[in-house]
Structure formats: C-alpha cells, structure tokens
Image: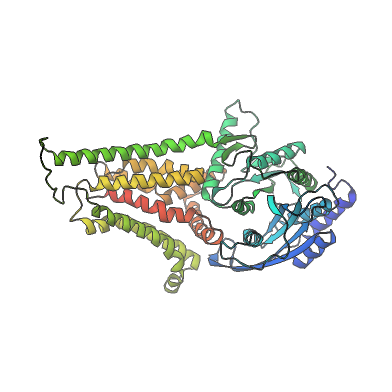
Length: 561
C-alpha cells in the first residue's frame, strides 16, 4: 500500500523507536509536540488530574495527574464533520513506546496523502485508561466520572471509529484483538471483520483471546478450541471491565478495537511495517464510510475471528433458565391460592366468609422486614467499604485498599446472620406459608434482574443465571437443609466470582493454586470497586445493590422458622 516502502521512512521509523526505547516514566510532552508539528499536524495538549477513591495498588497510584497529547490531520477534501482516531495509551513504564513510534510514522505517511475525507486524530494518552477517559469526556463536553481536566483547544468532527494500539516490541509474532468494552459493550462486527480482512491480506497472523484460530472445524479439536475461546470471551465480557482503551470509546457510541502485539508464537515474525500496512488499510476503508457502522451485529459471541454466534442463537439459553424461575413462581402462587381457598371454605358450603386469624393469612408485614433488611445489607455493602476506609486504617494496621476489601468481606459474611435477625422482627406474625410468599417475591425479583442484565450484558446474565437459578429453585426450609445451604453458598455472587477466576486461568492454561486464587480474588474485589468509581463500571453496584440482597432472601427462606 505504499507505507514505509522507501528506505527514508524506514530509517525514520527506526529512529523514533530507538528514541522511545528509553523508559517513559513521564510522557515526553514537549518532544511529542515538536514531532507532531514537524509532520504537519495541528497539535494540542490536555492536562487532567484525578484523585482515586483509594490507592490503586495494582498500578501504584492514588493522586493522578498527567497530560494527553493529540494531533489532528485535517481532511483536505471535506469539511471537518467526521473523524477517525488512532490512540496509543501510555502507562508509567515504556511497554508501549513502540506503538508511539508507529503512530508518529503513520501520521507522517498519512500527511502526504490527499484522499482523506475524514479528519484523523492521533492521540497519545498518559496513565492509560485514565487519560483516555479524560480526553473523551472533554471531547464530548461531559463529566461522568468526576475527572478534572482542561478543555480541549482543538476538535475535529464526530468520531466514527477508533483503533487503540499496544505494542511491547518492534517485532511481533501476532496481533491480538480485544473487543470487550466497559459493561460488556461490543463494537460492531463489521469493524472486527475489517481487521481480519487486512490481516489476511497482508499475511499477518491475528488471534482472539490470545488463541490461534482453529484450522479444521470438522475434527473434534477445532470445536473444542472454539469453545475455549468463546468461554474466555464470556468471562471477560461478564467482568464488565474495559479490556483496552477502546472500551471507553464504546460508551460514546464510537466503534473501536484494541490491537495488541504479542510474542507467544515464535514461528511467526513480523516487523512494524506489516502492522502499519494493516492499520493503513483499515483507516483507508473507514475513510470511505458514508454513515456509522450499523448493518452488522452489536450483540454476538466469538468462538473464532471467522465465526460468530448471534443473539438469536444464544439468547434462548438465558430465556430457558429464566423460564425455570417463572414456572417455580407460578407453582408457589398456585399453592398459596389453594391453601387460602381451603381455609376460607373448609366444608364447601355457601355463606359469608369468616375473617381469618392473623396466624392463618399471609400478611405483607411478614415480608417487609426481610426485604428491608436484605436491601439495607446491600446498601451497606455498596457504601461502607469506601466511606469507612479511613476509620479502618486508623484502628487496624492495614492499607486503604486492604481496608476496603476486608470491609466488603465482613459485610458480606454478616448477611449469613440475617435469618435470625428477621425472625426476631416477625416471629409473632410469620405464618407457616410466609416462606412461600417470600420465595415467590424473591423468584420474581431474581428473574427481573437476570432478564435486564442479560439484555445489556448477556455473558454476565447467563453466568449468574447458570449458578443462581438451580439453588434459588431448590431453596426451602424443609428437606436436606445442610445440602441446600451449601448449594446456596457455592452459587452466591462471591463464590461465582471466585470460581470464574479459577476457570479463566484454567482456560488460559495458567492454573492457579488455592492461595494464588484467593489473592487474585481479593485483587479483583478491589479493582471492581475502583473501576466503578473511576470509569463507571456497573458490576459492583449490580452485585451489591441487586443480586446480593436477592440472594439473602433465598438464604432467609432456607432458614425460615
């Protein structure tokens, strides 16, 4: 396609990569500004700062401040009404320095072309996702996360598509594509097909979830490998985390992908020229867009890059699980109705109905206390860990992040005492059929929550339905209570998260020991709370304010006296 086909551009790219091999402890803002201006871009900077709710021990940051640098290549053949974005997120180290060099080389090459009909924004963000979120909020003139940032001095048109690039070396063995965005959002499938097409055209090996694509679907190995890739996507999408900078673009209805250069398969070797040619081809095709990508699917699952499972095929699976809850709720309602009719008409003779004693009817008062106490526990689980971290650090020898996680676990475990607390409140009015009415309410509550979650994030809804529905349907205060209690604990939201971490690492062929799994579980709890307050991830409030109180209702049913 002409990119870096002459030795001059190759030497320029080599000099840029060599310059950026130095550790990027701080983004070289002045140097980036000079370099972008030298290739003919309109260059602007944006400063931002953010105080995290508690220290991020994974990235070792708390008070974050940085600067984003972006250059705009104006379209010579159209007004600045639409634009494309090529972004490179940079952290506190130099692991993505080669991507910055490739971005600058592409900017120099694109500047010499005259066919661009859309503005192209070359964006280098500091502090990875935090810088990307600050730039996106300022570009769209919103503030949804409390980020403090300076207004943008230069803008282009409405962003039609974006590509995030992450490279760890100047030689890659394959390009891995990440599609999972914030809260399980996915880009339009046409953008993924575009990436695969240009990788095949240039002979570049492309992977999904770090896995090579199955070559033979007729044998057993091909479908098994596709199932492994699909399960990895389900687990990553269910987490609700943005698995790359592209995940934050999806919040603003901008179709985006993250491309990562990996070095797992040593028999394949590609330099940055091959990667640049694939990116150039993608941008030239996106340049011809007459409207936003919308013809293909937005809801899908991927067993491979060349195959997908559409919503019409996988949604019935979640529907059948929710049908179990509906049928069980209908059965309980019929039993309650028959019992009330039997009490009102013991002999079947006509006559005025006799008022029932308080102990023979299912009063709403017996349900209010369990519902209120369960929701109060969920609210405490959501609010207290972050608010009480400073109190915990003053009285216990723990850090802020550890205090948040320990408070989460303490409140979660305290919910196991709820049956005793609620029965102290309603013991004088709770009838024998009270647990049936409470379970009826809990089944409807759970079905509504899982149905709404499955519509927005199918992977999360299906994963929770698979674990919670059987235990919810079986819970009752009669029979093998110990077995039912063990089943409820093993299918609780926390246990589901712990089991998902073990399954995820097993599918990645990097199994965990029990101690390593527990440490990863604690880190996942801290990251879930942090990402909710930082980026607006919804997994933590969904579990704490919705599913955890609902699970406590079934726990209350099991120990109903």
